[in-house]
Length: 152
Image 1 (cartoon, rainbow, N blue to C red):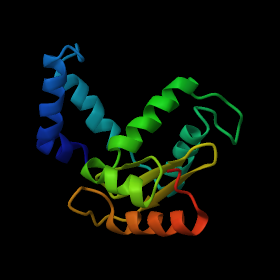
Image 2 (image 1 turned 30 degrees about the vertical axis):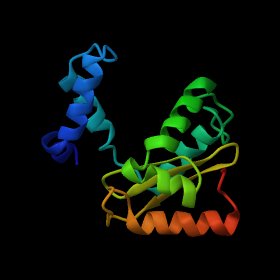
Image 3 (image 1 turned 180 degrees about the horizontal axis):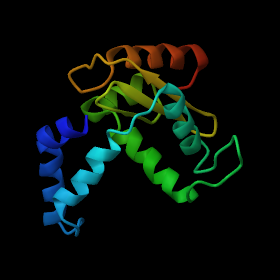
Image 4 (image 1 turned 120 degrees about the vertical axis):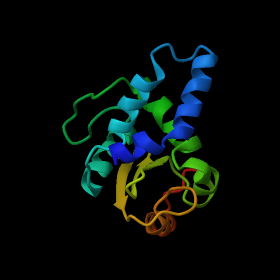
């Protein structure tokens, strides 16, 4: 996944260079992207995604251990970013239909964050035109409807 993203991540490169042009990034673009592509390639399963989402749902606190993993403010920024662009170009539709912050990955995983409640992790490798898991989005939609998880 890392090598593939590094070879084909031109949209990420374009965005990074644009951020550099506006003075929002000062480190070398390829160094930042290398870190980003590696982060996108970390091997996780559904349980890991749910645990990560659960920490974001509880504003940086691990509810299983009571340990603060990162400052509360960071979770607010991340959750807002997930809500607005975590599902790529499908983020708006996902917010309306499923209704909670989420992040999809090129491997077919989706991490969902239901604020103050729980994290959800799903995985199914077939991707839609936006790069999101087809079955994962469908399952999260059904789960959201069944458990009234839509926060909007």
